[in-house]
View (cartoon, chains in turn yellow, red):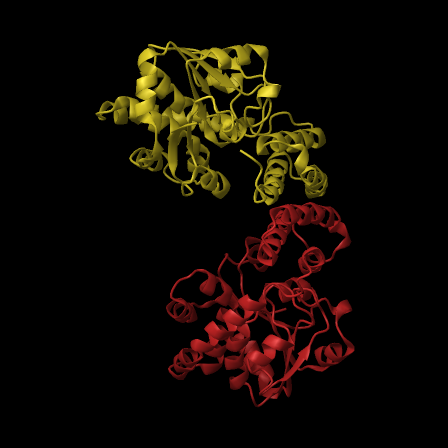
Length: 280
Length: 280
């Protein structure tokens, strides 16, 4: 997906958020923001928003010396998700179409950050989300594809969401599954550490994509990842950052996400907050 | 009011909005945004957000050649306000404290842009707003002050809101009133043209402040305005932009506004969407 003009103010907002999470020194936060404007002014040098995101988070890291400012937040999200894991399983137990329900659960996992940060009843709010329909739903194509498939690659997104993805993994254990995470801490995205904490090493080959951006920039990925990517019979890409970096690949990737920002919603032709399971 | 870090992403958002209202060429819009990042990176050279706003709108004007991109919008807002003028008068007729009600009406006028753009029932939504209480209400001080005052300066804000201000003016005709507007078109702020279209030349001395920013930067104001500003027994400052530029003057100005952005709400110690009538 190209970088829309609306992304430019949002880059600055994200840089401010990351700076504030990393430290409380307002002078340093301002310095980071001023340098961030220089990165944003070079917008034409980037192919996708996660590429800009990578630069901005490197900038924050450089100034703060903190490698993983979201570490506690990620741990907290994983723990919150694990507390409602039994509820997810019970929800699934009551469904006629378990596969579709497990895809929905994995999509809803994408909002664990908002649910936890919203300081509301996480469990009740999450369970309510499970009943929402996919606005675009390529489940029939997915069912057809998995009937002959042997290998599946899931490209993960946030920490915490990883626990929801385990529910999906457990419905697809007849496939040889690889689950890929980011190579380095970036925002609240899952790395190997959070993949392990979520138990994704059971049932999947848990690997790093080799990419440190909050998305999957193929040119930056490791050979190990690219071998799996090229050979996989089916790919499920989770979340917005992976969509932004892979949506133009035309390789038949299943994108599973909630449209959390107006720009991505518009690109997908849906409304903000809609869930989609779309093959592109 | 100082420039908060949260204002920096918002500057870029406002530049994009102004660029889009001025023309549809996306390449030019991007060029404007890139140049806007350079202005924003010099944030330390500005004392208040409206100073940055002025630079950004000059940038948009320079690239588009359009002097008053909001002209049609301003006309539309004035017409919308004039259509509900009789309803405002009828609302006022029913109130025990006409003075406080007319101040509330003038404060609500500040949301005419949102009400019109929201594509909803403007009249119903506006009338409902009249019943909301001021979160900070210095009406008693105001009543005491006007009991001995002879001159009043009202510093206007948006076009459309000007029609609501007429209601307030008509309750204060025992005072010698000056109504000041911006010297040049800037966003949807009122200039002399919109002041005249709103009928503010009847009952007030309608003047330009001499300042072309979306606020009142005293160093940029005309001698004519400063003479009135310095001599006025009472000053009412309308809206956020005037608050941002005058809140540190400590001259005993009555600020009448709706806190439409989280930063200004925080600075005032109120919640977003609260109405305030505060003397500082």
